[in-house]
Length: 209
Image (cartoon, rainbow, N blue to C red):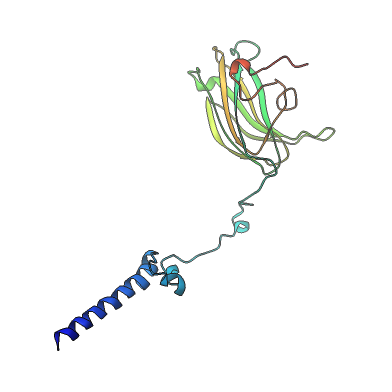
């Protein structure tokens, strides 16, 4: 066979092999489509595993994605509590939430050596004048920190009752993010009048009228 023809056949074979690799193998096996042939022919979907639609109703998880009327917000609340051997060592702090709204939280309290000396009750309740109050308890325990998320089971106020049983005075630092509203000072859920986003020394603000 003449050398020229052999070279031509070899070059043609290389071109065909390159087209196979770049046009078929790469899109089908590695999701790489440098020539665009995989997208045009559908070969770029062959690399992926079969798709199975997730049925949330059968899984019992409820609605997986929600939209909210109010905006996303974040707040830090510093709550000073006096020594556990006198008054002023306990209070409640809650935020207002609509049903199915989401709250992400983390709170810590320092200067307590024994976690058993700090008690908290994480709960929520409805606030509708003239109607029976619905109450939900999420957790009651002792400890110096907690973090997690809450999906409100009903319209109302949701948050914590904190009680310092230790001898030193402490500050509870609460960090919140999500879809909620702060409760005004003196209103149900914030009867103590705690002011958000200020140092603990300013947390009680001016005296309530």
